[in-house]
Amino acid sequence: MIRYWFTQSTTLVNFLKIIVATASKNPEYSVMETEAFSKVVKIVGSKVKIAQQCGVSPQVVQKWKSVVPAKHVVKLEKLTGGEVRREELRPDVFYD
Image 1 (cartoon, rainbow, N blue to C red):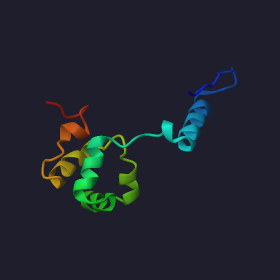
Image 2: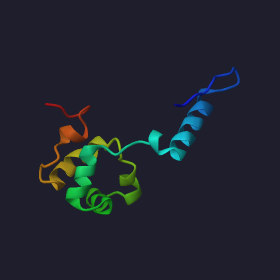
Image 3: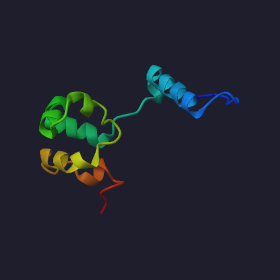
Image 4: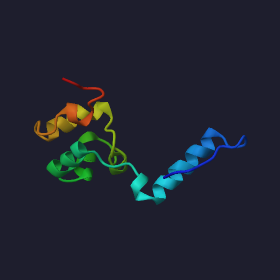
């Protein structure tokens, strides 16, 4: 559990820096890769191959753990041959 107490001198920015630092040191607080994105990686073969097909660096793809940018979702759907649908990757943007 994360416990921090705000004082008058604590700013929201400092609080967020503390949260980010805590998350990077504790795996239980880190962002998990979505099941749909994991499935894409498995089908395509690697994050490097995804990066090449999307025209971005592998470091950019590495940051897609929880949210794939909407502009790449249709491409990923095509790369998987429709096995992973756009609605699975971004249900907040694409829905039935």
